[in-house]
Length: 624
Image (tube, rainbow, N blue to C red; front, top):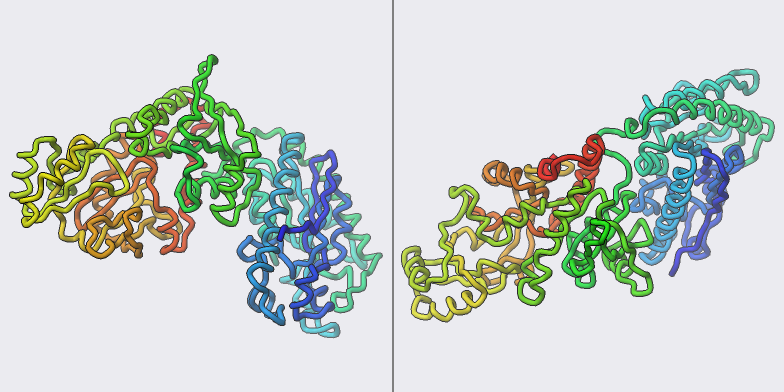
């Protein structure tokens, strides 16, 4: 079922925008059939009449659907009240809404935020910095119509929520609002206007401030319901007019203050590590072979959800033009929010949506997420394409990750042998059969695999009793080139741990390490998921962190922004630098969206690069 709109957007030519997202009272028929609260209770928890205040701004966004259908001032996950704890202790439902009904409401949330992103982006392009009034009201007689009102000391008549703003930047505008409204009188008394006492701003104001960090001054304005009877819903027109006049006068004063703020140099208003929206390109082997659970898809979805532009293209879609710039026939998506990777990929690969021919040199970040091993046999011309084109894109200040020159060094598993011997299994790399047999006899049990390749293909464990038949195994491996012969680690019986390293440090986000354990399937040597391995939660202790410290200097030297360490006991089995996967697996066990952490790291890099006018060493920027 497709979500239907429950709001209106009237666009005007001005830097002022006003929202009334809790003014609505209507519900979908299917919601009415299962909702338990009566009409009076519903109305009391809404913000009736606040839509009248939006008239002070040329651009008005008014929601006519009730917050009990979908609360647009909460995150998508929390936008539908499912328990009494979600709704001030109210039992909202006679019957718990089914998943389809809930998802229908959340699809409306998606559409709303897509549309306001488009609207506010257009205002930003036209006016630069702009001001948003996010109008709300709140109850102050919850104990009953005849009961004493809530303590005035903790409940100002007008609460101005500015918790999401850079107060230093927007001080003239915020002060103009507070000072002007405070001069108005209600029943002979100046309006009590205070900042961040009752509320600091809800999800909408935070989202706008985070999406337009250098451009939007959003004030979450919560007015105590002294302009109406909160128990009967009756409006007091004379009191309502006082607030309307106060807000109109404040708008005029804020227009003067905004001119002062407009003169301030942009980019200085950013909170550390936030920055403006980025343009990110993802190079993959082939867009059509991407899967919903792939890490690249998760990263692209997270970036899009966070307000950035994303483009994805295969190695065959890259080009070098006569203007000496790199171009790409790129796929992108129309929506900002996707509920899963399947719907994201459906839009990304929609044959009816033409690809954009973009200039890769104009991107902020180019993520090299193609795996050369996948193309080595069937498309050898494509194996190095991402690296080669990425090198050229660096010339114009694109941050290319991982660093192309570092990836070129790591193009075979021989790269692993350049890390400290203390953390590597004893190993030989050869095509000599006698050397292989001799090493196998010496170590007792060994692992034999190709020097090139991925996904756990042609990986064999050779035990002493297998030596009489080792020639067949050797022939199978040598067909792909050189053979790696490693001592077998007994700890491999318990599988291995994939630990991500970002910016040369063990990747930790919101207090959780980005890691997971892969368990072998039965007697299968390989714990790789493509080979049927299963997942478990990983405990990251001092031993694993010490390994990170040992590989850190080399990773920094080679500009390896994001890599995956495969750990068995006290040894590393592999360091994955090409398109390391598993962020979703780590998220499954840690409950943390690690993709979001990666995108935030990219934001810090693009901000740092902007300070140097896109002229900074790519290797160094890879690890900033």
